[in-house]
Structures are given as C-alpha cells and as structure tokens.
Image (cartoon, one colour):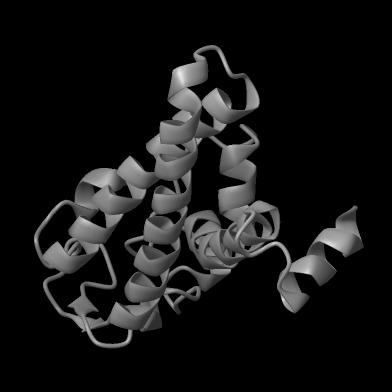
Length: 164
C-alpha cells in the first residue's frame, strides 16, 4: 500500500527534488509540444520552442543525475522499515516480492481484489521505473534529431534517415 512508503527514509530529499523537477519539465514539455504542433498564437511559437528544448535538456540531465544518485543515496527498501540500502538495490524485484508478479498482474487486470503487499514498490512499478530512463534517453535522442542545430550531426542525421 502507498501509505507504507510515506516516511523520510523511503524517499530521501534528493529523490524528491528530482521527482518534482521531472514533473515540472514534463508538464512544460507537454504544453509546449502541443503549442508547437498546434500553433494557435504565432508570437508564442519561438518561446514555446525555446522552453521545449530547455525542458528537454533539463529532463535528460535530471534523469542521468537521478540514475547516478541511485548508486550513492540510500533509501528504505521495504514499506514500514527504517533500514536503508543503496537505492539501485531496490530497482529489481526483491526476495520479499519477486514471487508476487502473478498476483500483481491479476490485481491490475481486476481479476484479484486483494492488493499485494511486499517491498516499497510493486513489481509493475519497478518494471516501469526501469523503463523510464531508457525512454527519456530515446525521447532526448529523437528530439535532437528534430532540432535544427543538431539534426545535421552524423548520429542524429542517421536517426532521422532511419525513421524518415
């Protein structure tokens, strides 16, 4: 349950800060992305593009910083405990919830009513949190492929040619 992980040791302040930076950057990326794709105010287009590129760099750098911090900052691995381990150790399913993948799938498919309890994060959360940095890197790369100052670079031009 979510309430088991709401204490200081579960979410250290550096992780809280990177979380909120990600939130603000993603919201601004979504809003400016819509403004770029559907230009409704011509004078705002330059600002929207600038903010979009800036937030893309912020999101990418924040993602790299967060992944690196996971190897140095400690957090509590299970709900309700104040014991701490280096955060990267909680990324993969742990012994106390590794066996619960089937129960989590049934729960999210509404086939099971009981919420599986285990570590601080459920198995589906861990899988999605492992995928997020990879997706941010791919989004950053595709953004650089479309950005005029970098689209001519060899690696970026190759990516643009690959997808058309």
